[in-house]
Length: 318
Image (cartoon, rainbow, N blue to C red; front, side, top):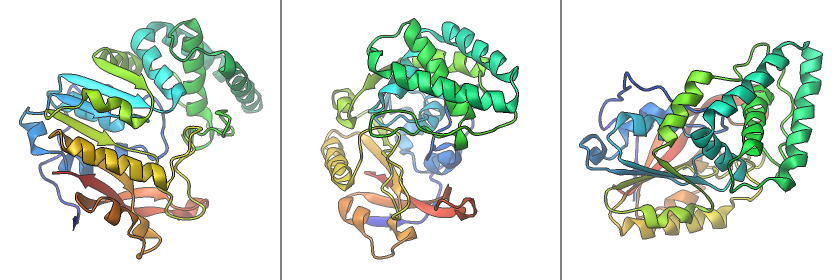
């Protein structure tokens, strides 16, 4: 095992044609870390020797959007255990114009309301979204999925802190955010995202669903729910399933299995040393891999003044 300080393997490159970007705000999203992640990408990526990109915890997709638009990737596979999120990606891929029409209608109506009326409208949409859940066929893209994805994007753009959080019943439970002029329907970006997703396999399921897609010309980026670094922190509530230490250990075993295929692997996670210098959970779990530390600005407690720079981990098998 090696624990390395931040260093760039090659310069961060922002392609001039890069258009598609995350369509959702996402807790723990990787937009702010793209430059550092780029520095730790395998050299084979820049040399064009990586043909497949796999991301089993797609989340907001910041790394996915950057990498597949910067490097000569031929095939993409993304998945997630959040069925709402997977449905949204599939809907944007297959019905983007219908989605834009629906979301634009929501946006126009929302901005015609007073702030007090906007709050009432938000909670009405949230109630509709949660009540409809039991009747949604998450395997099918149709007019219902268009409406649901529009509601999801609307709530994500107008809720507190732009979170996606659900309770154990899978119900969205983030309160209203009181933003003055949020961007709700970004037409150009949704169209760009749709175009990019046309060449992408999208699956719902546990991280192991990607196994058959991976070979020696594959780069896999794992961004699982972070292990909490304190008793009050939690990064696991984006899906109704919890992701505890046993899940982290199972994921580590999966990486060891994938290592045998010759694939290049990278994993992000929290650094327990921010809170407890003696917590070597990941050092033990990934003792056969390289453990790199990068800097991130995160809210490290419930008080907004707790935002600051902390270290996070990038684990690689190369």
